Image 1 (cartoon, rainbow, N blue to C red):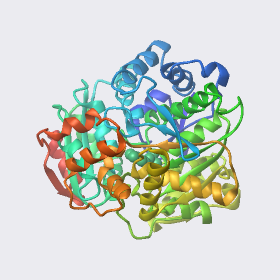
Image 2 (cartoon, protein in one colour):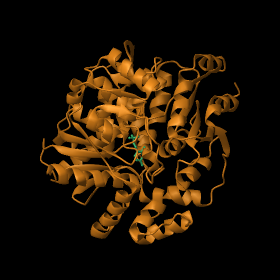
Image 3 (cartoon, protein in one colour):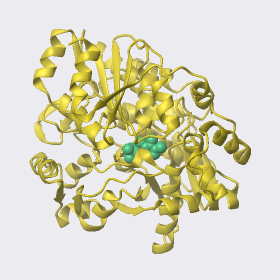
Length: 494
Ligand SMILES: *Cc1c(COP(=O)(O)O)cnc(C)c1O
């Protein structure tokens, strides 16, 4: 199976090439030429381990990897790095099934994909006879950065540079990044927001002159951002996994549809759920949950995507995004895979900051609906679920929980619901403890809050948190958002 650019149907690459490139040369994203279908029955899948399900799903998409190659990538990724043997676990609370995707090394769902991406990427380089060193260039709203750093640190043949918005991440997120070890790692804060960081990275990817300089030095860029299909494909796995776990537990009958609610930022995680539906998973609605930066909610409601609005810093920083890059893939599919039309809309987005889709396109997106939660609502739902179910969720997951409940109330749709639980509450303990105690804790010390959360939740403190408590700060570069390229040239000695 090949991959096509969302902006030019003549650009066609293999899966391993798509993983190496990240972004297509024309600025488009790679999409599968046609959707494969699950080959095993859901019942058969329900008897398999996470790794076996991962193989069944990923082999449908990464067809130029041999069985040995793919199996060894999967085995290297989904091992004891995860603190639970099932890799992703379901927890029943508040009328829903929370799919806990945060038992990996950096306690956010990004680990699910970023623990395998370095293996997929270095295998892809080998397969394509690439001798260049691969430079991973990444913009992060908080969680990708650390998960990518942890995945790529000291991986031979790679270097990694991460940009994050100086005042746009939580203290724990920042500490996790700036204490990162590894000779091949570099972390840079920018004076700007996540969209600035992401735009800066995108520009560097499209900069021919910079590419030539890299090439002369035996280097080439690749992306660990959620636009890379090497991240998207591993994310499809856990939706299939969740379904077959529900089946195994008798929570659903084989073939019975479920709803999936995803707290959304860059639209990667929910797009993976959409792809899971496309390959045959019985899914009814895909519920896209936004925080106060509700550009996606407005889009699904009106058909107009408009990023011209105030950027709001919230208690769910990993979702503080106004340009959801992966939406481009849904736009492409909803045009009936018309790259020209998709390119036109993306040009409008770049030039005017907005675009509108046709009613035909909206019909093709009817699987999706949107909702949003304000910061007050996020606090309310954290506190409610804690009191009723003695279960603590983080602020991002809480956006999902609020929206799932609102959806149920408003539509009367009582379909079994999976909510993607995207981070450990320990990653956002200030807002989480504040919500439970009903207090403003903005001045409280982070590590006191972590101890408090431990008492409240009876969840053990994850090793990811214990590690940063005494770690040395190893990265302290801060730059202007216009100086990102300069920083990259300096870091790489160009
Ligand atoms: C990245 C992230 C999200 C948003 O996921 P997208 O794939 O960007 O939509 C939600 N919650 C957490 C904790 C995250 O790290």
